[in-house]
Amino acid sequence: MNIKQKTELRRFLIAGFIAVGTDITAYFLMLQYTQHDIAKTISFLCGTLAAFFINKYWTFKKIHY
Image 1: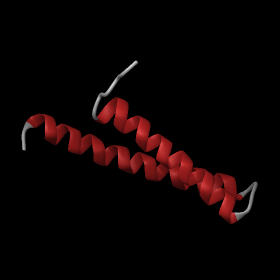
Image 2 (image 1 turned 180 degrees about the vertical axis):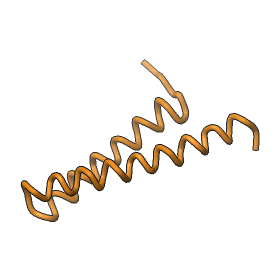
Image 3 (image 1 turned 30 degrees about the vertical axis):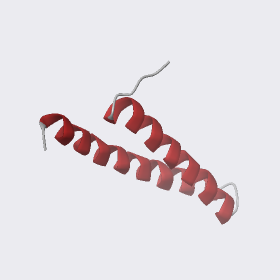
């Protein structure tokens, strides 16, 4: 495994923790305002979007216009 792969793996793991944190935070915030199923759906989407954009622009540095 070369340096670039190790860096990407480390960043990928950090991005995963951030995505999970986003999911949990959004879930508990949304639970105060809506039902369980809707809160989980919204929090899942927030976590997924966070993971996508963090991995795209920070982990793998893919910038396409």
